[in-house]
Image 1 (cartoon, rainbow, N blue to C red):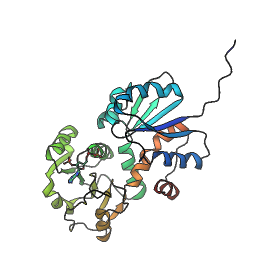
Image 2: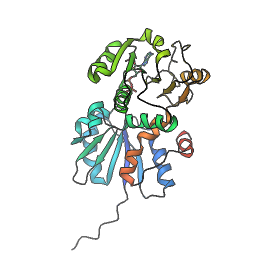
Image 3: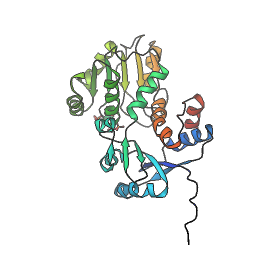
Image 4: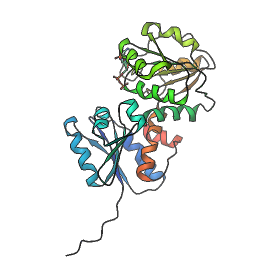
Length: 281
Ligand code: ATR
């Protein structure tokens, strides 16, 4: 008996997490698939840490062309990948996986791209080469942001974190661009910064607010927060009141998804007000 003709392939992709129900990515991808009237599906994939390796070996066989990766899998996914992009290697974590037809898994990290693209689109007159940047926090998000700021040409970065040793570790890794200051002294660096970035979870709904003294904020500065729930954090509210340009954190989430969507579904999607609304709904 001859094999029946192969069925037409509808691209499948998804987001791998544990937990994953909170992820905004399915709503975002559905919005873009609908907007561009593309065939394809994007689904949440709840994968426990012990099952990640099996999932990465199995999903390509089930017709998946790729996946986003979220907490807690970003580092392990990088280790399991067959090919790693330079920026994923630098950040030490993957957020975007491409499944090749031969079963090879390519790992990329688009978080830093999403961060910088959000600033470029929403603050078009931002010149990264006018420094310094003050970065608050030294976790996984800070890693991707530091890499992208250095890549964008920011000449000097002042980094501050509650746990100083984490900031020192990043400064050592990323080299001469970064000066570390104590967390209690970070407020003293605000006045001189051209760009101020909160990469901590402070200010997120249900978490503590960022209590730092913000009196030194002034017009001409660009201030951004990776927190997007709420969209207007205390940092952004006070920055706007002080005459700074502010960019909220939702755009980083949206722009980091652009390269994966383009790769898997063949169209480079635009981030519009409708995109923001679809994700916030
Ligand atoms: P992510 O990968 O999202 O960046 P993370 O690695 O847990 O998450 O990092 C969270 C960041 O928020 C860290 O910089 C953390 O500071 P520590 O390294 O000292 O933990 C920061 N953070 C969280 N809660 C904080 C708080 N109450 N005060 C100051 N910083 C806080």
